Image (cartoon, rainbow, N blue to C red; front, side, top):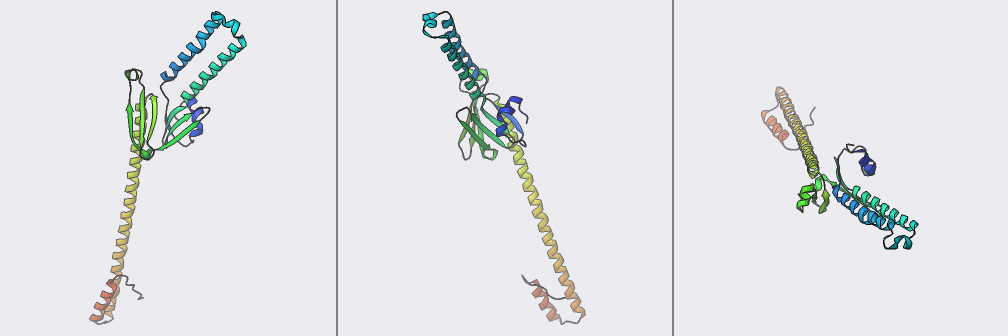
Length: 236
């Protein structure tokens, strides 16, 4: 595998050892950073500030054990959101494009065959996306519609890998067709050669018959018979 250690641990279940993994495309890190910052500030820092300063007499209303439980729930929620972000990826291998959306409650895995890729679309929705380098990637397939990865980073690497695999697949197909054509041509040459050799053998037999003083009319009739389709010469 050509992916980092953490990606290898998280995604080894979905990748066979003999596959070559070219890239694992995550959503842009900014999409989880803003979530973490907002949650820590509004759901952890502010409540802690109010609690320890006994604003609105919170210490008198809420026991400390309940407040600790609340912070633990916030912590677990943040872990879940980070896990959900990290596991919403595209895995680009030499065999498949794996569209993976995994969380604690639900797993969605789609294996996209490269032969099913119709075209790839990239676009940015806002100027902020342009500034941060976030892209929306759409793969249009022949049979299954669209596959979308929002807020993706490094989309050009993904497009380059997919394009390279498609080109290599096309080259392999052309080489296979060329090999088959060469085999067919070789077989046809062999059949023609065998046919010519057989006709030469028949002519030799007829020439030998001439030495036995066979009448010319019979030789002519024999020659015509041997030239007919599906005629089999049983003479020894």
